[in-house]
Image 1: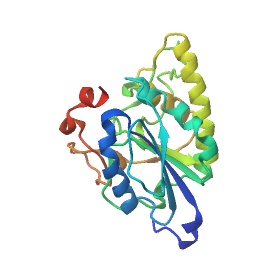
Image 2: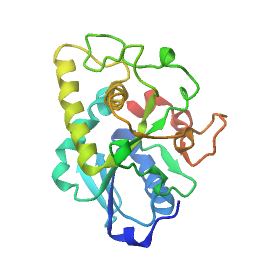
Image 3: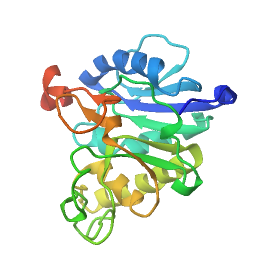
Image 4: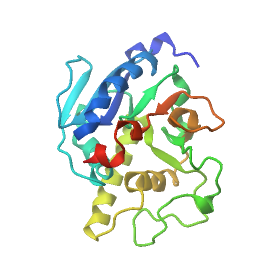
Length: 242
């Protein structure tokens, strides 16, 4: 879908986190997004980092200390809430920093009213699985418990977003519920992704196919539009998290 010229004054807020060794991935993320993601819109990047960034007029650096695994990812909604006063645009999207945009991405990722103005990606590891096999949080003691008869899709946490009002409402709710789980000594099975799936199981978000989160070294029957760069080529998860 082609972006209409009338959208040039609309602002898209792009959120990403790159603390520690992940900082080295920012440049490829930024330049590939600038080239291929929602080019008819003004984009503002909010980067949570403990490192130094090159000076770009559309990039806002947010000081964020490294929290350690799994808190670097699980506390992302708290990070988002900390800058809600800075988000003056129309849409908010979060991306993992190892995402690389290799094809033009247009308005097909923008949710409408029928989608509760939210969107997410059908997880490339679960798109062909049944609910029984989804990696939902199945413990009733967690705020993010989803019983086996609920939930149509399993969403990946690496790319999600929506209209600013709806996205930040979700962020606020999930931040509080994660804190409540932690206060009881509960860590959701897949951290922020478990929280996202719980929230989306109660909504009707726009779901886009795994083309938009295609693992670099996988072979699945979808086009490659946004790839998840293989972390093993960068030293692996443990190296990057350390």
